[in-house]
Each structure stands twice: as structure tokens, then as C-alpha cells.
Image 1 (cartoon, rainbow, N blue to C red):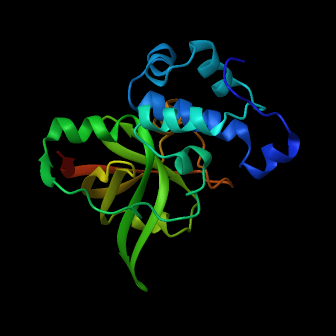
Image 2 (image 1 turned 180 degrees about the vertical axis):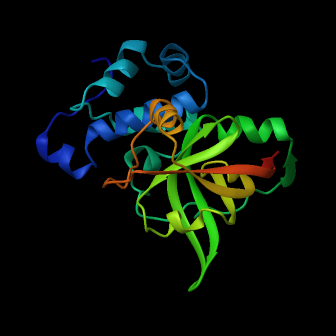
Length: 228
């Protein structure tokens, strides 16, 4: 390839599996709405090399190309390598000039998108509980799968909050959307079938999760941090 690449097995093991780097590059590129060609042009490399990094599990880009890609993708080399995977988000310092802005209802819906991972918050007999889980947006409702008898299943019939956010570590900015509403179980065959068809992914946590729950939004609000 046109950039320095190592396929040494020990290097691949030490550097968090090169295929993961390719997936992180592709995911961040898509988040920014960049094509492989645009990314390559801005990073000063060939589109074929970007394609190679994203598709070949043995690809190990050199440090110089990773630095350029991190700059183009508005992230860090550590993030592309997955070095921050075991750390909480938001470990960087605040930007010098930032402002907290309210999101419109339309902007909130756009950020919720069609699916993702969010946090379900509710009160329990043992106190407040927050649980991360995969969700799908169906007819403006937040739908998720859980196991009968689990903590998320206990929210049925209750008022809950559901939060989704995204943090840009490189720029110290981000956004959050908060949905408040009542949770209901979906038990009719047609309703369950439709949710199964629309679900983008099985729950990341795995296991048997046969109960569908929907949160019908009573209010949707959001905020973002702008950096100038």
C-alpha cells in the first residue's frame, strides 16, 4: 500500500486488533458524513488506502497516517486505536470558548436517529436506577427489549426518563437528548412482529430478552455544547 503498514502478528495484538482501528475510522467518517474519497483527500492519502484500512483486518496504519486521519476525523489517535475504551467519556479539558445551547424538537429527533444506545432512568424500591440499553425509535416512541422480571421490565406502567448523548472528545463538545414519558409493554403479536422487523440490532448484552417495552414521549428536550 502507499502508506507504511505493518502486518506483524505481535504488533496487531499489541495495537488493539487492527480491524478495530478500521471500524473506528469508518464509524467516525460516517458520523461526519465524509466519503472515503473526501477523507483520503483531506488526509493526503489514496482512497484505496482508506478502503484498505476499513476492510482489511490485518491493516496496521503507521503513526503519521493515524495522526493525519485523527485530525481529519476530529478525534485523537488514542480514540482511533481504542486506547480510551476502558475510560469514561469526557476526560479532556473544557474548550476555551464554549456555550450551552437548547436543541429544538426537530434537532432532538434527528439526534435520536432511528436507533442507538441510551440510558433508562427510573425509581425503584431500592432507589433511583439508570440502565444503558439498545433502543429503536418507532413512531416517535423509544422501544427496547429486555428480559421479563428484569429491572428495565419493572418500569412498565411507570413514568420514566430516557437519555441519549454523544461526546466529541477531540473538541470537548457534545449533545444530550432527554425523553420523558410512560412505559408500556408491547404484547400483541402484530406489534411485537413489527418491532422485531424494525430493530436494527439484537441487544448488545445478549441473552434471552423477549419483552418489548415502549416509552411514549410526553416531552423531548435537548442541549448541545457549541465551541467557537
